[in-house]
Length: 231
Image (tube, rainbow, N blue to C red; front, top):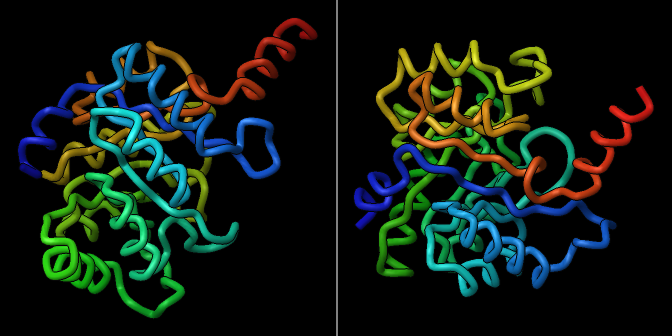
């Protein structure tokens, strides 16, 4: 079943349906509706953040959901501990996104320890297998995540840690390096602001591409128009 999901996501678009705290759209019901709209448009999977958001999105769509839980704003905060990952798994999502960087995790476990413990727990407690996506920031992190058994490695955190400088668009230099080095499916995520950039990511060998802000964040999209008009 898990391999079937990996295969069906090849060459597809994942849409990240997330809203920041304090925004008008910061509501699980709204995120579930956005997810439904994205699926109608052709999204093959949805990425959602927050336990209630993930639960509602899982119920609302019939495509694989990548679930995560952001806790904090500094350091490792994307599904940072085994406990966070277990709670995300309970929502029923098919894929769990974990911070896949080389940084120390809050509970002291290494990435590989977290992956192994999570898989065993899911088998014993949930009676099912789960897929794991590593949100990475460098080639070294992607290599580590692959060796640890991650099912997907993503460029999600490139430019958001000290590992690499932030590029205006996707970090295609990193994408090329990762695709050439690892065998695990590569997810290009981060600053995919146009359809052309999504196409370029797939042309470089990515397994799938994930876009969020350019599709699901009206405040940012509006600001791009305003900046262009004022310029």
